[in-house]
Amino acid sequence: MNLVGINNDQIRTPNNLAICLDFVSCWGAEPNRAQLGRLCAGSIGVCFDHLAILPKYKSKDGNPLEYGGKVLERLLGNGFTPGKIYELGATCLFEMAKAIPTEAEVESTADFLSTPPQERSGDSV
Picture 1 (cartoon, rainbow, N blue to C red):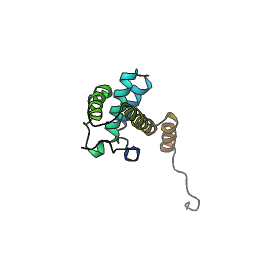
Picture 2 (cartoon, rainbow, N blue to C red; picture 1 turned 90 degrees about the vertical axis):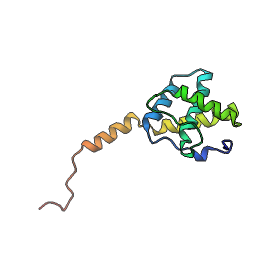
Picture 3 (cartoon, one colour; picture 1 turned 90 degrees about the horizontal axis):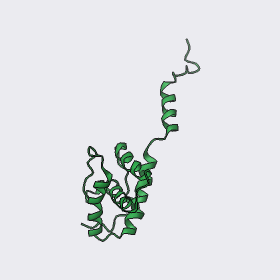
Picture 4 (cartoon, rainbow, N blue to C red; picture 1 turned 120 degrees about the vertical axis):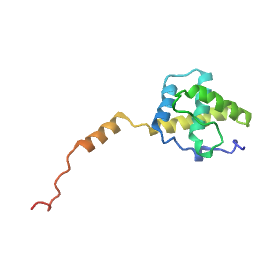
């Protein structure tokens, strides 16, 4: 198993936005340095899940830090430096944050869905 070759070009945010929110919420809570390392490692795990080389995140547990500890152990054991984990993990966290809809996006979608369709010109009888 070669983990050292994974890079930013292979990041894919999870399709499950709840997973993104799990991680971004922990990130926004200003974790300490040890927690941040686990969070970054866990974010790598979920953003590289498509490669099937790291432990799988169990969204029903909703525990990014515990999961991150498992991934951190695997990454360190396969040649990842702490600096690389923080760097790549922060990029993953940023990408997950971008995937979560903002209030403005939600309101815009709600307005679009609740606005009745306009009659097109030339359609009247």
